[in-house]
Amino acid sequence: MSNRQTTTDVILIGAGIMSATLGTLLKELAPDWKIKVFEKLDKAGEESSNEWNNAGTGHSALCELNYTVEKPDGSIDISKAIKINEQFQLSRQFWSYLVKSNLIQNPHDFIMPIPHMSLVQGEKNVAFLKKRFEALSNNPLFQGMEFSDDPEKLLEWIPLIMADRKSNEPIAATKIDSGTDVNFGALTRMLFEHLKRKNVEVNYKHKVENIKRTSDGLWELKVRNASGQIENHAAKFVFIGGGGGALPLLQKTGIPESKHVGGFPVSGLFLVCNNPEVIAQHHAKVYGKAAVGAPPMSVPHLDTRYIDNKKSLLFGPFAGFSPKFLKTGSNFDLIGSVKPNNVFTMLAAGAKNMSLTKYLVQQLMLSKEQRIEELKEFVPNAKSEDWDIVVAGQRVQVIKDTAAGGKGTLQFGTEVITGADGSIAALLGASPGASTAVFVMLEVVKKCFPQHAKEWESKIKEMIPSYGLALVEHPELIDEIHTSTAQALGLTEK
Image (cartoon, rainbow, N blue to C red; front, side, top):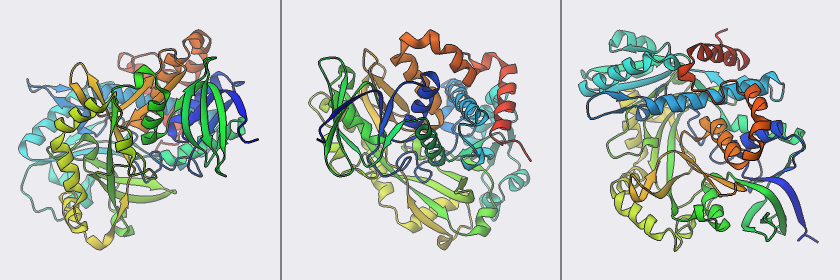
Protein backbone atom coordinates (compact mmCIF):
# COMPACT_ATOMS: atom_id res chain seq x y z
CA MET A 1 0.00 0.00 0.00
CA SER A 2 1.39 3.41 -0.99
CA ASN A 3 0.15 5.10 2.16
CA ARG A 4 2.78 3.48 4.36
CA GLN A 5 4.33 5.61 7.05
CA THR A 6 8.10 5.51 7.51
CA THR A 7 9.97 7.27 10.30
CA THR A 8 13.45 8.71 9.96
CA ASP A 9 15.78 10.98 11.96
CA VAL A 10 16.00 13.89 9.53
CA ILE A 11 14.04 15.00 6.48
CA LEU A 12 15.42 17.70 4.19
CA ILE A 13 12.94 19.35 1.83
CA GLY A 14 14.49 20.69 -1.37
CA ALA A 15 17.73 19.52 -3.02
CA GLY A 16 19.50 22.88 -3.11
CA ILE A 17 22.75 24.14 -1.60
CA MET A 18 21.22 24.60 1.88
CA SER A 19 19.90 21.04 2.25
CA ALA A 20 23.11 19.73 0.66
CA THR A 21 25.20 21.62 3.21
CA LEU A 22 23.07 20.68 6.22
CA GLY A 23 22.94 17.02 5.14
CA THR A 24 26.73 16.94 4.67
CA LEU A 25 27.35 18.56 8.08
CA LEU A 26 24.99 16.16 9.86
CA LYS A 27 26.54 13.13 8.13
CA GLU A 28 29.92 14.16 9.54
CA LEU A 29 28.53 14.92 13.02
CA ALA A 30 26.11 11.99 13.37
CA PRO A 31 27.06 9.40 10.74
CA ASP A 32 24.46 6.87 11.87
CA TRP A 33 21.45 9.21 11.59
CA LYS A 34 19.02 8.31 8.83
CA ILE A 35 18.39 11.19 6.42
CA LYS A 36 15.85 11.49 3.62
CA VAL A 37 15.61 14.23 1.01
CA PHE A 38 12.53 15.16 -1.05
CA GLU A 39 12.92 17.30 -4.17
CA LYS A 40 10.05 18.09 -6.51
CA LEU A 41 12.25 18.45 -9.60
CA ASP A 42 14.12 15.60 -11.28
CA LYS A 43 17.61 16.56 -10.09
CA ALA A 44 19.55 18.54 -7.49
CA GLY A 45 20.43 22.23 -7.62
CA GLU A 46 17.92 23.20 -10.29
CA GLU A 47 16.25 26.23 -8.71
CA SER A 48 17.89 29.02 -6.66
CA SER A 49 21.21 27.13 -6.38
CA ASN A 50 21.57 26.62 -10.13
CA GLU A 51 24.56 28.32 -11.74
CA TRP A 52 22.36 30.21 -14.20
CA ASN A 53 20.03 31.39 -11.41
CA ASN A 54 22.50 33.20 -9.17
CA ALA A 55 25.60 35.34 -9.57
CA GLY A 56 28.00 32.83 -8.01
CA THR A 57 29.99 35.68 -6.55
CA GLY A 58 31.16 33.86 -3.46
CA HIS A 59 29.85 36.84 -1.54
CA SER A 60 32.61 37.98 0.76
CA ALA A 61 31.83 41.73 0.66
CA LEU A 62 34.96 42.39 -1.41
CA CYS A 63 33.03 44.25 -4.10
CA GLU A 64 29.38 44.66 -3.02
CA LEU A 65 28.90 48.33 -2.16
CA ASN A 66 25.56 47.77 -0.39
CA TYR A 67 27.39 45.99 2.47
CA THR A 68 29.27 49.18 3.40
CA VAL A 69 27.00 52.08 4.25
CA GLU A 70 27.98 55.71 4.56
CA LYS A 71 26.81 57.00 7.95
CA PRO A 72 25.35 60.51 8.43
CA ASP A 73 28.74 61.73 9.72
CA GLY A 74 30.40 60.62 6.46
CA SER A 75 32.23 57.63 7.94
CA ILE A 76 31.82 54.15 6.47
CA ASP A 77 30.22 51.36 8.48
CA ILE A 78 32.05 48.16 7.52
CA SER A 79 30.51 45.89 10.18
CA LYS A 80 28.20 44.08 7.71
CA ALA A 81 31.07 43.58 5.25
CA ILE A 82 33.18 42.01 8.01
CA LYS A 83 30.32 39.75 9.04
CA ILE A 84 29.65 38.48 5.50
CA ASN A 85 33.35 38.01 4.76
CA GLU A 86 33.79 35.97 7.95
CA GLN A 87 30.78 33.84 7.01
CA PHE A 88 32.26 33.09 3.58
CA GLN A 89 35.54 32.05 5.23
CA LEU A 90 33.54 29.30 7.02
CA SER A 91 32.33 28.04 3.63
CA ARG A 92 35.89 27.98 2.28
CA GLN A 93 37.11 26.00 5.30
CA PHE A 94 34.28 23.46 5.10
CA TRP A 95 34.74 22.91 1.35
CA SER A 96 38.50 22.50 1.92
CA TYR A 97 37.83 19.88 4.59
CA LEU A 98 35.57 17.97 2.16
CA VAL A 99 38.24 18.05 -0.56
CA LYS A 100 41.08 17.09 1.81
CA SER A 101 38.98 14.22 3.23
CA ASN A 102 38.32 13.07 -0.34
CA LEU A 103 34.55 13.42 0.15
CA ILE A 104 34.35 15.62 -2.96
CA GLN A 105 36.87 15.89 -5.81
CA ASN A 106 37.93 18.42 -8.46
CA PRO A 107 37.28 21.70 -6.64
CA HIS A 108 37.94 23.66 -9.85
CA ASP A 109 34.62 22.27 -11.10
CA PHE A 110 32.88 24.55 -8.59
CA ILE A 111 35.29 27.30 -7.49
CA MET A 112 37.74 29.48 -9.44
CA PRO A 113 39.87 32.48 -8.45
CA ILE A 114 38.65 35.75 -9.95
CA PRO A 115 39.36 39.38 -9.01
CA HIS A 116 36.45 41.16 -7.32
CA MET A 117 36.08 44.84 -8.21
CA SER A 118 33.83 47.79 -7.39
CA LEU A 119 33.41 50.49 -10.02
CA VAL A 120 31.83 53.94 -9.60
CA GLN A 121 31.42 57.13 -11.60
CA GLY A 122 30.89 60.74 -10.49
CA GLU A 123 32.74 62.83 -7.95
CA LYS A 124 30.56 61.93 -4.98
CA ASN A 125 30.72 58.18 -5.69
CA VAL A 126 34.49 58.28 -6.20
CA ALA A 127 34.88 60.02 -2.83
CA PHE A 128 32.68 57.30 -1.25
CA LEU A 129 34.69 54.48 -2.85
CA LYS A 130 37.99 55.98 -1.65
CA LYS A 131 36.66 56.23 1.92
CA ARG A 132 35.35 52.66 1.68
CA PHE A 133 38.72 51.47 0.41
CA GLU A 134 40.52 53.19 3.29
CA ALA A 135 38.14 51.67 5.85
CA LEU A 136 38.40 48.13 4.41
CA SER A 137 42.06 47.95 3.43
CA ASN A 138 43.16 48.47 7.03
CA ASN A 139 41.25 45.32 7.93
CA PRO A 140 43.12 41.98 7.72
CA LEU A 141 40.12 40.32 5.99
CA PHE A 142 40.47 42.69 3.05
CA GLN A 143 44.24 42.54 2.61
CA GLY A 144 45.53 43.20 -0.87
CA MET A 145 42.73 45.54 -1.96
CA GLU A 146 43.89 48.23 -4.42
CA PHE A 147 42.24 51.53 -5.36
CA SER A 148 42.71 53.53 -8.54
CA ASP A 149 41.08 56.56 -10.14
CA ASP A 150 43.66 56.66 -12.94
CA PRO A 151 42.03 55.81 -16.29
CA GLU A 152 45.31 54.30 -17.56
CA LYS A 153 45.47 51.90 -14.62
CA LEU A 154 41.77 51.06 -15.01
CA LEU A 155 42.35 50.29 -18.70
CA GLU A 156 44.87 47.64 -17.55
CA TRP A 157 42.44 46.19 -15.01
CA ILE A 158 39.22 46.29 -17.05
CA PRO A 159 39.98 46.88 -20.76
CA LEU A 160 36.48 45.95 -21.92
CA ILE A 161 34.89 48.51 -19.60
CA MET A 162 37.40 51.32 -20.28
CA ALA A 163 37.75 50.95 -24.07
CA ASP A 164 36.08 53.79 -26.03
CA ARG A 165 34.74 55.39 -22.84
CA LYS A 166 33.68 58.93 -23.82
CA SER A 167 32.56 60.24 -20.43
CA ASN A 168 34.75 62.85 -18.71
CA GLU A 169 33.19 62.04 -15.37
CA PRO A 170 35.60 60.95 -12.63
CA ILE A 171 35.76 57.15 -12.43
CA ALA A 172 37.37 54.85 -9.87
CA ALA A 173 37.60 51.19 -8.94
CA THR A 174 38.88 48.91 -6.22
CA LYS A 175 40.32 45.50 -7.02
CA ILE A 176 41.17 42.51 -4.87
CA ASP A 177 42.60 39.34 -6.39
CA SER A 178 41.48 36.93 -3.67
CA GLY A 179 37.85 36.85 -4.90
CA THR A 180 36.20 33.72 -6.29
CA ASP A 181 33.53 32.59 -8.70
CA VAL A 182 31.49 29.75 -7.22
CA ASN A 183 29.32 27.44 -9.27
CA PHE A 184 26.76 26.60 -6.59
CA GLY A 185 24.84 24.32 -8.96
CA ALA A 186 27.92 22.12 -9.50
CA LEU A 187 28.74 22.15 -5.77
CA THR A 188 25.16 21.18 -4.87
CA ARG A 189 25.24 18.24 -7.30
CA MET A 190 28.64 17.11 -5.92
CA LEU A 191 27.36 17.21 -2.34
CA PHE A 192 24.27 15.18 -3.23
CA GLU A 193 26.43 12.56 -4.97
CA HIS A 194 28.48 12.40 -1.77
CA LEU A 195 25.33 12.09 0.39
CA LYS A 196 24.04 9.24 -1.76
CA ARG A 197 27.33 7.41 -1.22
CA LYS A 198 26.71 7.90 2.52
CA ASN A 199 23.32 6.12 2.24
CA VAL A 200 21.20 9.25 2.33
CA GLU A 201 17.93 8.50 0.53
CA VAL A 202 17.42 11.21 -2.10
CA ASN A 203 13.96 11.22 -3.70
CA TYR A 204 13.51 13.28 -6.85
CA LYS A 205 10.12 14.14 -8.38
CA HIS A 206 8.64 13.98 -4.85
CA LYS A 207 6.57 16.99 -3.85
CA VAL A 208 5.86 17.68 -0.19
CA GLU A 209 2.21 18.75 0.01
CA ASN A 210 1.62 19.03 3.74
CA ILE A 211 3.43 18.99 7.08
CA LYS A 212 1.76 18.45 10.42
CA ARG A 213 2.72 17.59 13.97
CA THR A 214 1.70 14.18 15.24
CA SER A 215 0.63 13.48 18.84
CA ASP A 216 3.99 11.84 19.58
CA GLY A 217 5.92 14.98 18.60
CA LEU A 218 7.10 13.84 15.17
CA TRP A 219 6.53 15.81 11.97
CA GLU A 220 4.48 13.97 9.39
CA LEU A 221 4.88 14.86 5.73
CA LYS A 222 2.39 14.10 3.02
CA VAL A 223 4.48 13.52 -0.11
CA ARG A 224 3.28 12.99 -3.69
CA ASN A 225 5.73 10.64 -5.39
CA ALA A 226 6.83 10.45 -9.03
CA SER A 227 3.88 8.24 -9.98
CA GLY A 228 1.38 10.57 -8.33
CA GLN A 229 0.68 8.44 -5.26
CA ILE A 230 0.66 9.85 -1.73
CA GLU A 231 3.24 8.64 0.77
CA ASN A 232 3.50 9.55 4.44
CA HIS A 233 6.91 10.12 5.97
CA ALA A 234 7.66 11.15 9.54
CA ALA A 235 10.82 12.57 11.10
CA LYS A 236 12.11 13.90 14.39
CA PHE A 237 13.64 16.89 12.62
CA VAL A 238 12.62 18.60 9.37
CA PHE A 239 14.52 21.26 7.44
CA ILE A 240 12.58 23.21 4.80
CA GLY A 241 15.15 24.38 2.26
CA GLY A 242 12.94 24.79 -0.77
CA GLY A 243 14.02 28.30 -1.80
CA GLY A 244 10.93 30.37 -2.57
CA GLY A 245 8.85 27.23 -1.95
CA ALA A 246 9.84 27.22 1.73
CA LEU A 247 7.33 29.86 2.88
CA PRO A 248 4.11 27.98 1.93
CA LEU A 249 5.45 24.83 3.62
CA LEU A 250 6.48 26.76 6.73
CA GLN A 251 2.94 28.17 6.91
CA LYS A 252 1.53 24.63 6.82
CA THR A 253 3.47 23.68 9.97
CA GLY A 254 1.31 26.12 11.94
CA ILE A 255 4.20 26.91 14.34
CA PRO A 256 3.78 30.33 16.02
CA GLU A 257 7.07 31.49 14.45
CA SER A 258 5.50 31.10 10.98
CA LYS A 259 2.83 33.72 11.69
CA HIS A 260 3.09 37.35 10.55
CA VAL A 261 5.69 36.40 7.94
CA GLY A 262 5.17 37.01 4.24
CA GLY A 263 7.17 36.78 1.04
CA PHE A 264 7.75 39.23 -1.79
CA PRO A 265 8.88 37.56 -5.03
CA VAL A 266 11.44 39.25 -7.28
CA SER A 267 12.46 37.82 -10.63
CA GLY A 268 15.58 38.59 -12.60
CA LEU A 269 17.22 38.47 -16.01
CA PHE A 270 20.85 38.42 -17.10
CA LEU A 271 22.45 39.34 -20.40
CA VAL A 272 24.89 36.59 -21.39
CA CYS A 273 27.66 37.23 -23.89
CA ASN A 274 27.83 34.81 -26.82
CA ASN A 275 31.00 36.25 -28.42
CA PRO A 276 34.24 34.52 -27.29
CA GLU A 277 36.34 37.55 -28.35
CA VAL A 278 34.38 39.81 -26.00
CA ILE A 279 34.45 37.23 -23.17
CA ALA A 280 38.26 37.02 -23.47
CA GLN A 281 38.65 40.77 -22.88
CA HIS A 282 37.25 40.71 -19.36
CA HIS A 283 38.53 38.88 -16.29
CA ALA A 284 36.81 40.07 -13.09
CA LYS A 285 33.53 40.45 -11.27
CA VAL A 286 32.79 44.16 -11.37
CA TYR A 287 30.00 45.53 -9.18
CA GLY A 288 28.54 49.00 -9.63
CA LYS A 289 26.09 51.01 -7.56
CA ALA A 290 22.36 50.24 -7.52
CA ALA A 291 20.06 52.79 -9.13
CA VAL A 292 18.09 54.95 -6.72
CA GLY A 293 15.01 53.02 -5.57
CA ALA A 294 16.42 49.68 -6.72
CA PRO A 295 16.53 46.72 -4.33
CA PRO A 296 20.02 45.68 -3.20
CA MET A 297 19.92 42.45 -5.19
CA SER A 298 19.72 44.39 -8.48
CA VAL A 299 23.13 46.02 -8.22
CA PRO A 300 24.47 45.99 -11.80
CA HIS A 301 27.53 43.78 -12.25
CA LEU A 302 29.62 42.45 -15.14
CA ASP A 303 30.84 39.00 -14.18
CA THR A 304 33.36 36.55 -15.50
CA ARG A 305 31.83 33.16 -14.69
CA TYR A 306 32.97 29.58 -15.11
CA ILE A 307 30.04 27.38 -16.10
CA ASP A 308 30.66 23.80 -17.27
CA ASN A 309 34.38 24.66 -16.98
CA LYS A 310 33.94 27.26 -19.70
CA LYS A 311 34.55 30.96 -19.23
CA SER A 312 31.44 33.07 -19.75
CA LEU A 313 30.41 36.69 -19.24
CA LEU A 314 27.15 37.84 -17.65
CA PHE A 315 25.70 41.28 -17.05
CA GLY A 316 22.76 42.07 -14.81
CA PRO A 317 20.67 41.36 -13.00
CA PHE A 318 17.66 43.19 -14.32
CA ALA A 319 15.00 42.85 -11.66
CA GLY A 320 11.39 42.12 -12.44
CA PHE A 321 8.21 40.89 -10.89
CA SER A 322 6.39 37.57 -11.11
CA PRO A 323 3.89 36.25 -8.55
CA LYS A 324 5.67 32.85 -8.63
CA PHE A 325 7.81 31.84 -5.64
CA LEU A 326 9.96 29.50 -7.77
CA LYS A 327 10.84 29.49 -11.47
CA THR A 328 8.86 26.25 -11.65
CA GLY A 329 6.19 27.67 -9.31
CA SER A 330 2.60 28.77 -9.85
CA ASN A 331 1.13 32.19 -10.60
CA PHE A 332 -1.00 31.74 -7.47
CA ASP A 333 2.01 31.43 -5.12
CA LEU A 334 1.90 35.03 -3.90
CA ILE A 335 -1.88 35.17 -3.38
CA GLY A 336 -1.83 31.70 -1.75
CA SER A 337 0.77 32.86 0.77
CA VAL A 338 -1.52 35.57 2.16
CA LYS A 339 -3.13 34.21 5.34
CA PRO A 340 -5.31 35.79 8.04
CA ASN A 341 -2.26 35.99 10.31
CA ASN A 342 -0.04 37.85 7.81
CA VAL A 343 -2.50 39.83 5.69
CA PHE A 344 -1.85 43.11 7.54
CA THR A 345 1.90 42.50 7.42
CA MET A 346 1.65 41.98 3.66
CA LEU A 347 -0.60 45.01 3.10
CA ALA A 348 1.72 47.23 5.15
CA ALA A 349 4.67 46.01 3.07
CA GLY A 350 2.78 46.76 -0.13
CA ALA A 351 2.00 50.31 1.00
CA LYS A 352 5.58 50.93 2.13
CA ASN A 353 7.18 49.58 -1.01
CA MET A 354 5.17 51.23 -3.77
CA SER A 355 8.34 52.72 -5.25
CA LEU A 356 10.03 49.29 -5.30
CA THR A 357 7.01 47.70 -6.95
CA LYS A 358 6.97 50.49 -9.55
CA TYR A 359 10.70 49.98 -10.17
CA LEU A 360 10.26 46.20 -10.65
CA VAL A 361 7.38 46.66 -13.07
CA GLN A 362 9.41 49.23 -15.06
CA GLN A 363 12.34 46.79 -15.19
CA LEU A 364 10.02 44.09 -16.43
CA MET A 365 8.89 46.29 -19.32
CA LEU A 366 12.40 47.01 -20.64
CA SER A 367 13.09 45.94 -24.22
CA LYS A 368 16.33 44.15 -25.12
CA GLU A 369 17.66 47.39 -26.63
CA GLN A 370 16.95 49.28 -23.39
CA ARG A 371 18.82 46.57 -21.49
CA ILE A 372 21.77 46.91 -23.89
CA GLU A 373 21.75 50.68 -23.18
CA GLU A 374 22.19 49.87 -19.48
CA LEU A 375 24.98 47.44 -20.35
CA LYS A 376 26.71 50.27 -22.28
CA GLU A 377 27.19 52.11 -18.98
CA PHE A 378 29.61 49.24 -18.27
CA VAL A 379 30.70 48.23 -21.78
CA PRO A 380 30.55 51.34 -23.97
CA ASN A 381 30.94 49.46 -27.27
CA ALA A 382 28.56 46.57 -26.46
CA LYS A 383 26.66 45.23 -29.49
CA SER A 384 23.20 43.79 -29.12
CA GLU A 385 23.95 40.72 -31.25
CA ASP A 386 26.76 39.65 -28.87
CA TRP A 387 24.35 39.27 -25.96
CA ASP A 388 21.41 36.95 -25.21
CA ILE A 389 18.83 37.21 -22.42
CA VAL A 390 18.69 34.48 -19.77
CA VAL A 391 15.99 34.34 -17.07
CA ALA A 392 17.62 34.15 -13.62
CA GLY A 393 16.19 32.54 -10.51
CA GLN A 394 13.14 33.66 -8.55
CA ARG A 395 13.96 35.17 -5.14
CA VAL A 396 11.45 35.63 -2.34
CA GLN A 397 12.33 38.44 0.07
CA VAL A 398 11.06 38.02 3.62
CA ILE A 399 8.38 40.40 4.90
CA LYS A 400 7.83 40.58 8.64
CA ASP A 401 6.97 42.91 11.49
CA THR A 402 10.14 44.22 13.12
CA ALA A 403 10.83 46.53 16.06
CA ALA A 404 12.98 48.79 13.88
CA GLY A 405 10.90 48.87 10.72
CA GLY A 406 7.40 48.37 12.12
CA LYS A 407 4.69 46.34 10.43
CA GLY A 408 5.39 44.76 7.06
CA THR A 409 9.13 45.41 6.81
CA LEU A 410 10.84 44.01 3.73
CA GLN A 411 13.98 42.14 4.79
CA PHE A 412 16.90 41.80 2.39
CA GLY A 413 19.10 38.85 3.30
CA THR A 414 18.88 35.26 4.43
CA GLU A 415 16.86 34.20 7.44
CA VAL A 416 16.26 30.95 9.31
CA ILE A 417 12.98 30.49 11.16
CA THR A 418 13.10 27.76 13.80
CA GLY A 419 10.34 26.18 15.90
CA ALA A 420 10.72 26.77 19.64
CA ASP A 421 11.70 23.16 20.35
CA GLY A 422 14.20 23.01 17.46
CA SER A 423 12.39 20.16 15.68
CA ILE A 424 11.78 22.18 12.53
CA ALA A 425 13.62 24.95 10.67
CA ALA A 426 13.03 26.79 7.41
CA LEU A 427 15.31 28.95 5.34
CA LEU A 428 13.82 32.07 3.77
CA GLY A 429 15.24 35.02 1.88
CA ALA A 430 17.88 35.61 -0.76
CA SER A 431 21.40 37.01 -1.20
CA PRO A 432 24.04 36.44 0.21
CA GLY A 433 22.31 33.04 0.60
CA ALA A 434 24.41 30.30 -0.98
CA SER A 435 27.75 31.95 -0.13
CA THR A 436 26.94 31.84 3.56
CA ALA A 437 25.29 28.39 3.48
CA VAL A 438 27.83 26.86 5.86
CA PHE A 439 27.41 29.63 8.43
CA VAL A 440 23.61 29.51 8.14
CA MET A 441 23.45 25.71 8.46
CA LEU A 442 25.83 25.75 11.45
CA GLU A 443 23.34 28.14 13.07
CA VAL A 444 20.58 25.58 12.37
CA VAL A 445 22.71 22.84 13.96
CA LYS A 446 23.36 25.04 17.01
CA LYS A 447 19.72 26.07 17.46
CA CYS A 448 18.08 22.76 16.67
CA PHE A 449 20.47 20.30 18.32
CA PRO A 450 21.68 22.10 21.49
CA GLN A 451 21.80 18.76 23.32
CA HIS A 452 24.67 17.67 21.01
CA ALA A 453 26.66 20.94 21.19
CA LYS A 454 29.39 19.62 23.51
CA GLU A 455 29.74 16.28 21.78
CA TRP A 456 29.97 17.83 18.27
CA GLU A 457 32.17 20.82 18.99
CA SER A 458 35.55 19.19 18.36
CA LYS A 459 34.38 17.68 15.03
CA ILE A 460 33.03 21.08 13.92
CA LYS A 461 36.39 22.67 14.79
CA GLU A 462 38.23 19.95 12.88
CA MET A 463 36.14 20.78 9.79
CA ILE A 464 36.09 24.56 10.35
CA PRO A 465 39.09 25.68 12.43
CA SER A 466 37.81 29.25 12.94
CA TYR A 467 34.37 28.12 14.21
CA GLY A 468 33.27 30.26 17.17
CA LEU A 469 36.07 32.82 16.70
CA ALA A 470 35.83 36.36 15.32
CA LEU A 471 38.49 36.20 12.62
CA VAL A 472 39.02 39.95 12.77
CA GLU A 473 40.50 39.45 16.24
CA HIS A 474 42.86 36.71 14.96
CA PRO A 475 44.78 38.15 11.97
CA GLU A 476 47.33 35.30 12.07
CA LEU A 477 44.47 32.80 11.63
CA ILE A 478 43.13 34.75 8.62
CA ASP A 479 46.46 34.28 6.79
CA GLU A 480 46.57 30.63 7.69
CA ILE A 481 42.99 30.02 6.49
CA HIS A 482 43.46 31.98 3.27
CA THR A 483 46.61 30.02 2.44
CA SER A 484 45.37 26.56 3.39
CA THR A 485 41.94 26.91 1.75
CA ALA A 486 43.41 28.45 -1.42
CA GLN A 487 45.74 25.46 -1.63
CA ALA A 488 43.03 22.83 -0.95
CA LEU A 489 40.58 24.44 -3.40
CA GLY A 490 43.18 25.00 -6.12
CA LEU A 491 42.90 28.79 -5.96
CA THR A 492 46.63 29.50 -5.87
CA GLU A 493 48.23 30.93 -8.99
CA LYS A 494 49.72 28.15 -11.06
